[in-house]
Length: 257
Image (cartoon, rainbow, N blue to C red):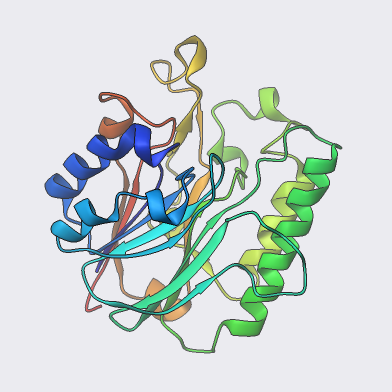
């Protein structure tokens, strides 16, 4: 199985880019974040014409996640399934070829100490609780998406610049670590233990050209899948192409899945 995750920053703005990328790269599963569209306005027919089944969890103008799969999708669930009244479309799960695929778009947090920052930390805790309820020992499962957290100094272009700042605070990093601690492996970092791999670059001030990026997009897998991980890459060429998202796709290949 070849799985990709990509924050497209608006599927309507990036529809042609995503179609072209799918035709060129042909992943078995593509998880999208920040689609910014209601389900009935998502261009699903075009992706189905390429041979992909489509599961959606969207909302107007904001957030939104999707899973595209060459294998049929079953057991589709939307949201974290807890008692919290939360209308934001940020989590979607489905099973493809026997693998439980979960995709998340974690809140940005806006500013350290703000109400939205508190919401972000609480949302990560809700995600941890969801995984604790649903992850089965020995299962082939993965959680991918835009987590809006750079986990370690290796994941930011200049740690001193980001110390104490949004996306890299100790609180955010600790919250993400608790999510991983339910029994997940950061498969990209496992395959590239010392590499500076960024997945997001600000549109402003030539950040991409200077490679001033952050690794915010992650693929976390259960040990059963980690043992089958063969390769991982960040598709920087797509970030450098026409009408790019500010995020690049992350691709992981698994053997015998």
